[in-house]
Length: 125
Image 1 (cartoon, rainbow, N blue to C red):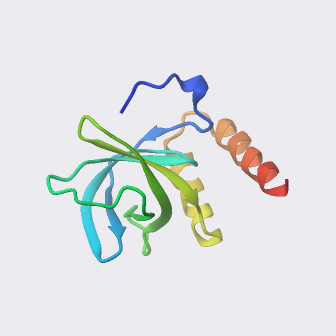
Image 2 (image 1 turned 60 degrees about the horizontal axis):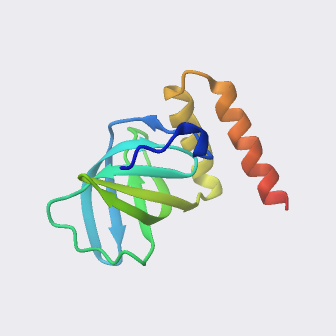
């Protein structure tokens, strides 16, 4: 992934190593999560990667909870064995688990609260 200055990112990424299933149509790739934020995620790249880059993906992050965290995303870049996804949609059922996951790994929970307020304000527009 390209070294992007933190100040250019809309959301803080946190490094978390968890299993993730990347799904597209009938295809499923078993990968590892590298990092995640309210707006995106990065995973490792599987050896056999034959996805349709312009089609949406579903990411199922296995956090240890009964149900995986489900995110809907588009692939933004493939670089140095990493896949970068932009999260397009988080269902209401998944925003609380995503928040808990991020809060458990962020050094400053106030930053996460500010980012969540930013999303809520954007939704009101």
